[in-house]
Amino acid sequence: IRGYASGATYTGIYLFVEAEFCAHENTTEIPATEATCTEAGNTAGILCSDCGEILEGNETIPATGHDYETVYTEGKLTLVCACGDAQEVILDTIADAKAYDTKDRVYHVKGVVTYISGTTVYIQDENDGICVYFDKSVDTSELALGDEIFVSATMTVYKGLLELNGPTSYILVSTGKELPVETVTLADLAADTTNTYLGERVTVEGLTVTALNPTGNTT
Image (tube, rainbow, N blue to C red; front, side):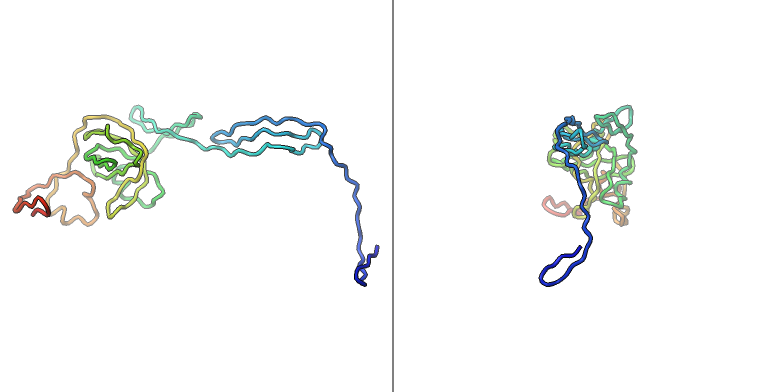
């Protein structure tokens, strides 16, 4: 087969295919399905019963993922989703959190409240203490010194202070606990180069106040 254009000759082979087009005369409604935590869903749609073509809708709805609620029962902390999935939380010590190596990891710690100032709360366990900087949405007015709480949050450093950063809730475990305190000396504090006592409630032994300055430093 030859063709001509602008004085040039082109040679080629042409294939003619007879195709049948579906008129989509018979259709079936596709019901909508809700997405679950682990499986995708779809919107309602219309399917051609003759050729199988999707004529309308039937768009994929991504799986929602688990939405866990933290539950404390019988001394265990568990993440529970409405779908029934549950995962026991491995608790971290405050020392674990202070030795963090990534900003993305969530630490789950328990401690006794030793200080409260708005959304800034200090907690302490048997060996260490830390600042918890709650999200502004958290009402800490019902917290009291001696409350034992669970907190889950990532770590950050703010002006040299290690913090559990921005938790949006806490779980009250018990109340009226004795405030933990560690006894140290001035020499201990002076020799501390790794922030061992940062965030802790301490009693300093052998301390003598030689001058009192209510508006500045005291020696």
